[in-house]
Image 1 (tube, rainbow, N blue to C red):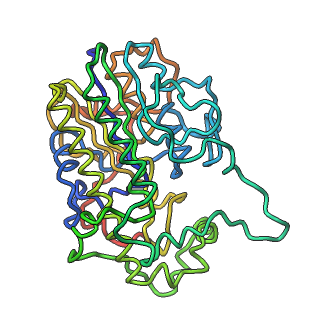
Image 2: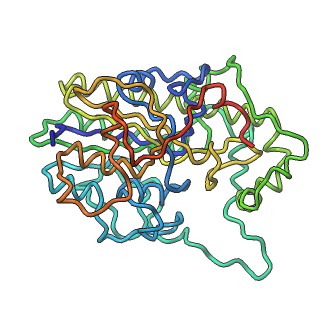
Image 3: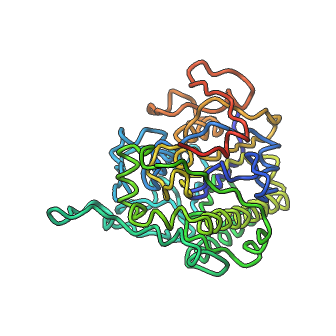
Length: 389
C-alpha cells in the first residue's frame, strides 16, 4: 500500500454544506474551498455519525459508531484505551499534531496526538453531563435562541474568533517548520459555530447579498416530530418561535453564516499557500470536513442534535497528491470513514488494525465502486435550498 508523505485535516464546526459555495450556493464566496473541491473529490452525501460536537469528533477519531464507544453526549468521554487514527499514525512514524478544537472530555486530552499546539475552546470537565432537573421542571440546556437574533449577530470580535486566530497561527507556524518525519496535522477551527459574529471585512462582503430564507407552511407545528418538539424546547426555540422565524432574524443568521464561511475560506487559502511555499503541496493529502451542521432556521429550528439534513449532513472534500480530480461522489459516506482513510494514506495494512465501523474512501476517490457502501440519490443544487420539512 503506497504511503502519502503528509496529511493535513482542516476541520470546522457546525458547517452545513447547504450554505457553502463549494456545494453550489451562488451567494457564498469560498474560492479556496471551491478550488480544493475542483482539484479533489467532493462528497455530496456525507453525514455525521452524531449531530453533536463531542460524539461526532469521537467518531472521527476512532472510526467507530458512537454507540460502540459509549460517547453519546457533549458531556461524555470515550475510553483512553480506544485506539484512534492518531495512535496508528504515531506508531507508523508520523508526527501527529493537533491545533485547535477537538472537544475531548475527561483527563485524556491527546487520545494519541503527540502534542497539542493550543488549549481547547471548551472545558474538558464533565460539567456538561446531564443533571436531573427539579421534579416537574422542563429540561432546558441553554437559551441558544439568543444567538439567532439579529441584535446579537453582525460584525465584531469574539473569544471564538480569538481562538481560531491562535489555532491558525500555530498551524501556519507548524507547517513552516523543518520536518524530519512525515506529519499529520489536524487544524480544527470553532467557526462557523455561533455566535454569528464575524470580522467586519467578512460581514461587509454580504451587505447587498440576496439572502434566501426558509419558507414555512401554515400550521408548521404539525410538521414537527416528537424529537423536533423536544429539541425546540431544549434550545429555547419553542418559547421564541416568532423571533426565530422572523425574516430579519433569518437573514441575519444566513448573513452571519456567509461571513464566517468566507472567514474560514481565507484560513484554508493561507494553509494551502504555506504548503506551496514550503514545497509540500504535492506530497500532502488534504481533508476538509465538519463535525455536523446547523438547522439555521429550517423548520423553525436552530442548532443541531437533529437528524434533519441541515443538522446531520456535512461538507467533506478530500484532495490527494497524484490522484486526479474525480466527479462529485453521491455515495453516502460518514465522518467515521475518515479514520480508515487516513490509515490507508499512511500505508498501514489491514492486519495491523483493530476493526472500525467506517470504510476507507480510497476506492471512491479513485473512481471505483464500493459495493459495501450505501448508494444515495443525486441531489441537485436546487434541491439543496428547498425547505426541509
